[in-house]
Length: 276
Length: 115
Image (cartoon, each protein chain N blue to C red):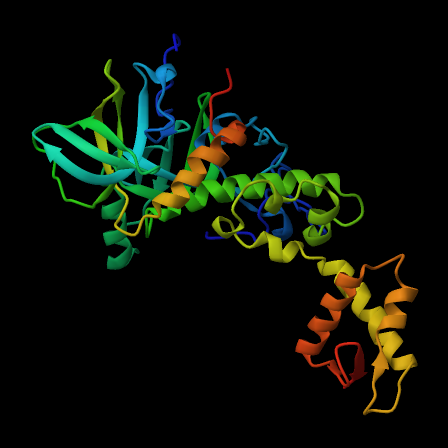
């Protein structure tokens, strides 16, 4: 049952047409695949979540969560293993169902390592409540491949939560966080955080959507104003004509991109281009 | 801090971040094992500074190993170690330092108990 959704918490959901999973019309309907998201969280966030609807403090409704935490105790049962894990933000119990007959030796070995006290593990699972206490049903409990997974996970928690926040503030372009990063002013890359430490959000933030508009405009301009091939079409008139819409550096960046993509080539100098 | 510290909750610190407000609290420090003298261990924390840690006699010391130490802050600002966790030789201490000094304080709602 390893359904890790593609989204990481945007919950924007596509068609979302859930159908009841039981004929009796139970209140829990199966989410459409677009709504089955996986959200990286800390134990603190899990403990603060509202049940039974399973809503995090920032409003996200994770289908499944990812945790990185250290094993404090592990108690094997006949059909499951109960772990108690902690990550510095809190402590929680994790129940992993085990079918020892069908598991291969590699999985058995990993599980043995995971049960050592004071190993850090990566948990994929679902938040549930049992007798008023929160618990995680762990679909996957595996030792981390490196201590850096801990740092990475915490950074991912913050990144995914902040991206969700700024995504909510943008009207009309929820799927394009590139444009969102520019206009929302809450750009993740620009606030004293080393861009190298985090996934390269800054690159995505570089006008992905407006870049396509410029490129289309440039393509139209060069098509309509073609000149003898050894001279090329001058770029400067385009810059002047569109000075209200695009800056020169945006235009030159788009021209460079189109050249490296093989759509344009320069002729006399960097102010004259031809379409390929 | 007068309130009882919640189980499983401990601030992640470096020598620089450790201050008076952490007296008698359980804290976590990640660093590399620098040297040991009997039961007193020198841990080079994520900021490059040395933190004194008191360990059990059976502590396995390997120079350069990077570990997480969870323990109680004593009256003279050393840490009485309860748990040691291996973080691996390839652990990026510099990145971890960025995490605890810049990210965690700024986005504390994901990490800290809100009082």
